[in-house]
Structures are given as structure tokens and as C-alpha cells.
Amino acid sequence: MRRNWKHFVIYTAFAMSVFSLTGCGSPSGNPGGEVTTAAPKMVLSIGTKDNLKSYDFTYETATPDTAGLTWDANNPDADTLIAIIAEVTGWNLHLAEPVSVSPGSFTIYFAEDSSIFTGTVDSSKTDFAITDRKELVTTILDSIVANMNAAYNESLTIYFAAADGGDISIPEAGITISSSEPYTMEAEAE
Image (cartoon, rainbow, N blue to C red):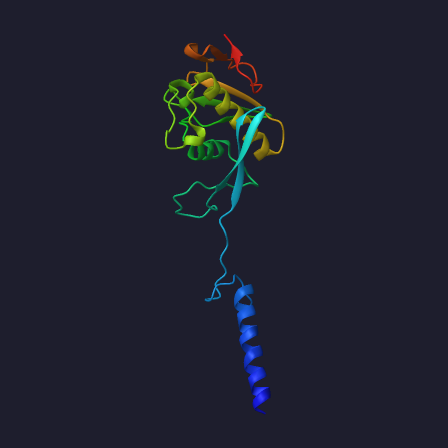
């Protein structure tokens, strides 16, 4: 009888250790039995047309009174997507007005204080601190186009414009982005 009791204790201890390692007994593997869910992630593509890199962004779900950016992949919002890109990169992507949506196309009006015009970036986000103005503008615009195409799951017609609706002109970088022609993921020389 002693021998059976000893085996029982050993098997019980072994079973308990296996259950604690695998998380059996509670849905999420936590001792309280509470179900926890990881915050949803989206993958952003940041870079230029031929050199896009993927970055994970964890976002809040659409809940009332949330301070975080919310994202609904089933009903994407261009303004929110641009705000998410700005949060991840440290670029100032202030818009002069909400993104204009018309059948088959989007028009994005950048504010005068945006990184497009000022060239300033958050230096604490070292992965995205680009000092060359032409490269910065191209990277911002290419990143927005790539992420909007991914969010809407199609190749979109996207126009970029200054706050007044005119062309984006950066003389010191030698580039002009036409507000009347769709952006083609490469800046045109002036």
C-alpha cells in the first residue's frame, strides 16, 4: 500500500507540473482563469518604393473612452492610418483638413507645419530620422501610399497637395509633387 501511495504522489506532482507549464485548467494560462487577449497588431510598411520595411503597431480596439489610436481593418480610415504612421515614425504628418475621399481616389492636404514642409522629425525615433529632405519627402509619401493600398486591399489613386490645394513644392530639395496628378511613388525633379 505504501508503494502505491508513493506512486500516486509522484504522478500527481508530475501531472500538476505539466498542467502548470501548459496552462491547462485556465483559458489563458493565468492562475485567475481570466481570459486575456493581446492587443491587435497591424503591420506598417515604412520606406521608399523599392525599400519598404515592416513594422508592427499594436493598437487599441474601438472602445469608448480610449486614449489610444483605434483602427478597424474592416472599415479603414485614411486619417487614422496617417496618424498611426506619424506615431510610429515620429514624423509630423499634420493634415490641413481631413483626407478627401471621392470615388476611387483620395486627396491628402498636408499642413504647413508637417515634416513634408519643415523637414523636422522626432530625433528620438532613430530608425526614421532622415536628414536628406528629398529622401524624407519620398519616404513619407511612399509609406502613406503603401499603407493605404494595403489597408484598402487595392491599388488606390492618391493625390498629395499643400494646405491651399496647390502643388507640394520643396525648392531646397529640388522636388515638386503635382496636386493635379496621382502620386506614382517617386518624386519628380523640378
